[in-house]
Length: 176
Picture: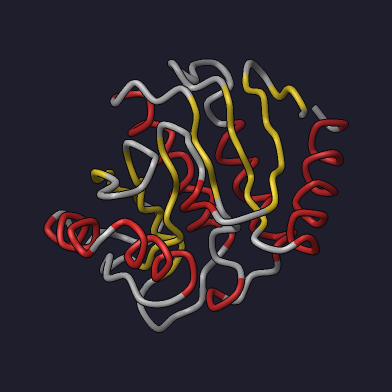
């Protein structure tokens, strides 16, 4: 675990849908339909009602976020971070901005623990390192006022992705 501002940031390996935290983040597209990857796993385990609720709030601009209930998941909320438009690549700027929007939503909903996957990595075209850097920069924008958010998990589905997240987090914390 690393402390950045007043946030305790930790890297974990595994399935984000299994985490018992206030909110998990979905690596979403701006139309908010949930296809493959993290979104598909959330929809399969949490229920189609998550996708229906998300889509009722969209479409949104790339770089924005919306919050929904979490269906059958252990989390209370899913925050859908639009790191890319449908069928187009993710960008570091979209990821950074969507994380900043996610933090605003987390504050508004009393979230104290939030878990982020590598938004925009994989099908989005970013590397895990690029995604992690953008996520951390989005979090840093809330250093002065993180609201109730105290604990952030960066979730790598595989050991390799978790190792990459850990490396970026360590470098980021040393630069603070």
